[in-house]
Length: 398
Ligand code: GLV
Ligand code: MN
Ligand code: MN
Ligand code: MN
Image (cartoon, rainbow, N blue to C red):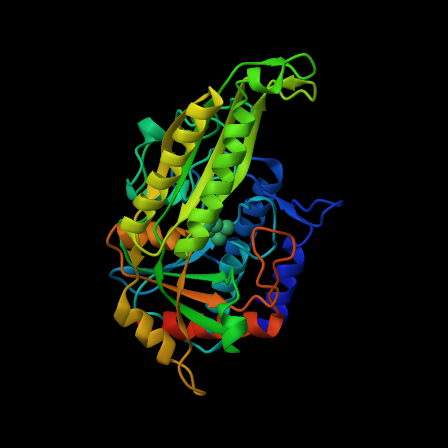
């Protein structure tokens, strides 16, 4: 590339800033296979070409830009370019921009890796369109089959099978190690006063659909005691989940809900709500979901409604490669970087579960806020991340 690595990093960042940004909220809407997200992908392909990287894609839309040097198992680094609805700028793209900048930094140092280095972009990491998080990496590793995934539908009823060819992937066939850099999504690094940190593990987590069914009726003429109101059952379930998770140091969130017929003057007939639940242990996650389901069922009995609970996806706990994590954490003149657990899901977790030695680097987020336009990272901290990533890639390909 032309300029210095910090300048080029800022330029890349400037390129991405307007893409898919809402003028009203300042947040990002980069749902997979929509035009804003495709603009980011086109940008990535241009960046790969400008660096002379060889681009390889699979049938699902995952991409790797290869620096074909050396031989043997490759070292892959990267993240995703899609966002949640009204998301922040950094969740995903920071890992991709940093991976490209780390390649630039290695080249500026005259490093010639003895193994291929790939910059990866996994598709639909957030599950914001088709509902299944880490969809691209699940398909690339075979954790989810194409036969199952092709039937997933977005909110307009468009099937995944209608927007991608689908089939198979050999993108990860020769990958020996994966390193994902990501903006931190909580306050751990702020509290510890550290620019970057290293991941130890991902909490088990899952998405559960609650279908509450009652009877539609007139909001004025139906006596309160004569109603079968699924909204009431839903509301009490959300409160119960919040209390249950708070008492046990776990996480439970109802962030998405659909109401039928969704009219102000009608008791609803149906409420569909999705619970996102996360716990430190797999057993804790099962206990939480069981307890919330029990309370929802009890409440439905009292309300004259019914509830059905479906686990749409469950991700078991992931422990990252501990020797890789320890080496990353120790790689710092001023002392060890913190090693922290994360409650967020990542493609790195899927690759790790597939048996690929994997590590994650987090860059401090001064707002501590993520999945929101308030997400932030300072350029100085990002550059510490790029440098740590380049050091890691260099060590892994020596
Ligand atoms: C993905 O970002 C998740 O953890 O929900
Ligand atoms: Mn995210
Ligand atoms: Mn992410
Ligand atoms: Mn994520």
